[in-house]
Image 1: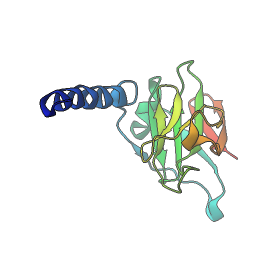
Image 2: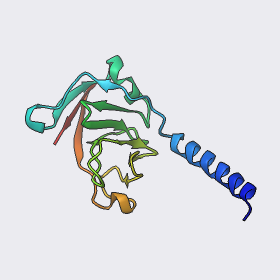
Image 3: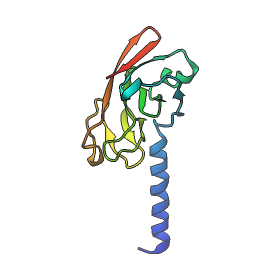
Image 4: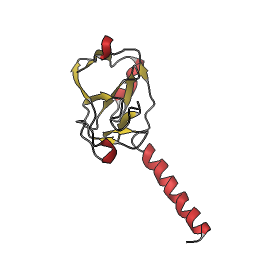
Length: 141
């Protein structure tokens, strides 16, 4: 393969990778003011009418709470929550993308139930319960 042909192929691949990464996952990170409880326990409530949680009004949207929990809205309209810490390497890069949990650090993918979907996600992901009561969304372990 000649150098020019190689560069052309790389350009197409890079464009595809950037487009695929953004489709369905370009939600603005909106750090919510609510925080998980003391001692690392997770039990907090989000007011869905608060401006800081506006991303949860749309499917595929998510918010990050205290840099430790990501709360999102699945394609079926349900609310889901998981740790931001990836099981592949302990990096806080997990977010909701294309109706699955995705780690931007190394591409680990997890189902909404926390099960691994690729080699980097094989160790699974910690998932939290959600409970909707009117406009209040409780997230707890």
